Image (cartoon, rainbow, N blue to C red; front, side, top):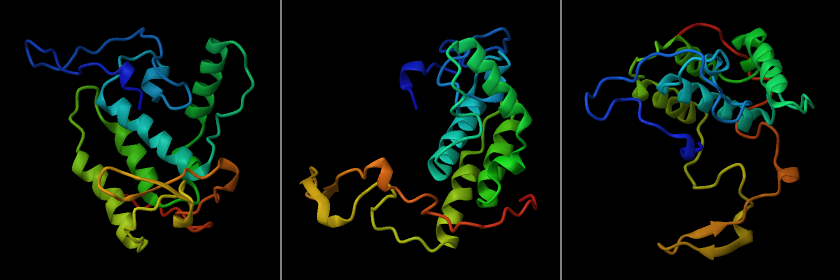
Length: 186
């Protein structure tokens, strides 16, 4: 998340949601912006969450269908990315990965501009998946090397790990390859 682009979604005086607006320019990395932002709609919480969904998919898949277009002009690139995002179904985008990714992005895309997202529902999607996959809460993440590569201790005396080099990352380490997407809604 680029908090340099952050802004209030409620007016500080009236406490009302910011007004819906069109004709806005894209703010942020084109790869991750929501479809609404591609369409020039003022962004709100729903768009931040949709963007986070693309980031999560990128982390698990190592790429998104609209990456690597090799277009120099930023406006042309944004239009090409928008076209691919629009034409790529959620089923195709999330194919081979747990239904939670599909449900997350679908939920975000269905939110109204001024809707308050159900953050507990979204967190539960992935915490339940974590439990279902029987992951061990050991503080190790996909991008860390094994403990033998410890280089420092943090303020609490816990060992910190060096980030793993990208070429050493195992693709789809968190979820078994070939897991089928169950399109049954929650």
